Amino acid sequence: MSIFRFFFSKSFWISIVMMIIIAFTGIFVVYYWLKSYTKQGELIEIPDLSTFTIDEVEREFEKLGLRYEIIDSTEFVASFPRLSVIDQYPSAGSKVKPNRKISLTINASGPRKISVPDIVDKTRRRAIYDLESKGFEVGELVYVPHIGKDVVLGLRYRGQDVVFPAEFTLGTRFDVIVGMGLSDERVRIPYIKNMLLDDARIRLNSFGLNIGAILYDEDLLDTAKAFIYRQEPAPNWNAIMRMGGSIDVWMTDNENKKAIDSLSFHDSNPMIQDSLNGNFQNEGLEND
Image 1: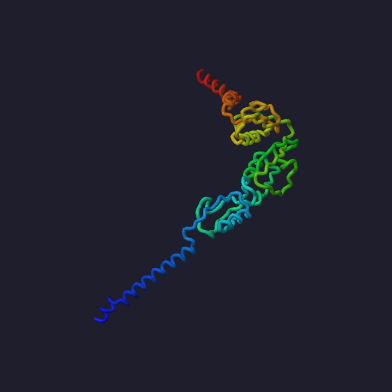
Image 2: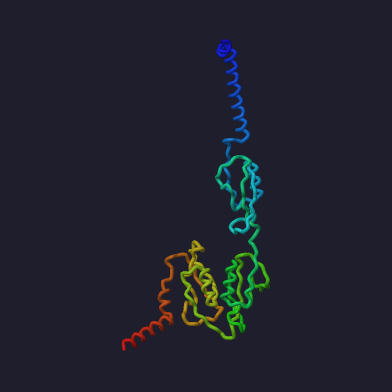
């Protein structure tokens, strides 16, 4: 009976109430301490750091209470300043807790240099392929008197001969010195209307010719979309132009100026006409 009386005694219930109060107090204390320690509910929006220098990132993160780590960039991106931020993780606009570490990709200090392939004594076509496959560009084809016809004699960069072995940055444009042989060889003038400038340059180089003067329309809006609508000299199936000559081009982005004479030019190909004449002759023989 004494135990039963204890459960209903005043001291027992006071003890129970005190234990409940102490437990809830402990829970609240721990909860608010953890919330303060982990900064639960406090988030920071990450700004767009593109083109920021490291000094600018440090100043910005010091105000925001964030940290950063740098991931080196292996390639140079020309559209971004040197040694500036080109990428970040998490991305701009993401929300993170204070003291979060943000990963940054930094632009290289400059374009990477690589070895220029030694194309001396190779054919013109092979040399152009080797240069372009390595990430270089071909500028002018400079033909000089030499017994080796269409043999590459060297490269020039900004008027200076390239001495091998050599290293240049990716995208460097070289003029290619090519032997013209002992004869004053003439070549056909290809049709390059409606082509983009780079495509036309490749097309002309394959014929041993170069791009000459480039004239843009005054109302041109987008040079990246500009195409050739006129060329001088005009395309010709006959070998009338000296190898190494230049073709002047007129550029526009006006679709209404697109040339429509390509079919008539190709129809005038002497080889096509000879083929057609041969077919007619064969048909005549068969009919006989």
